[in-house]
Image (spheres, rainbow, N blue to C red):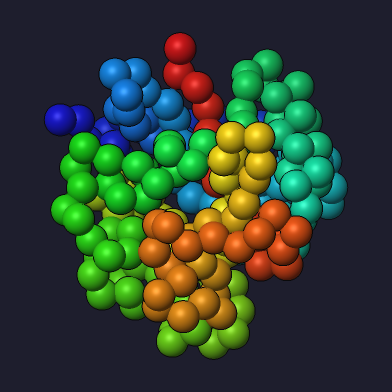
Length: 190
């Protein structure tokens, strides 16, 4: 089995690099961002005032994220998108390297998630805590993440104010709730 870190793919847009990790899934694979989309990447893609912020971008609606993805795709000539529920949950659980943890990468929530017990009521820079088995950071906690589930979308994985039980792979909030929500981008690898 491969090591996610060694096979990661670095993309660059308007001077800002971001990393996707390949995940073997259903006899194919897809790429998923190592981190939630940062304010730095959002600003670069949306051509707003440049930012070095590694905080996850949040408080954007589904249509805002669609605009971001459309602009990113125009800049890169690729087809970035939000992950499907199956892809997202598989990556959250560590894929083929899964150790069966309760949270993404650990049974000890504070090792991998910013949640109500350690976040101090706010977002934190991505990649400050331990990654999961495949090298993904902050899939539990920090900000909820946009996930497509058939014809609908939801926000999964908990956020900085969530209880422990909300930072598991099955927890989501409804599509209308986006105050605490970001997006981890995916790319089909055909």
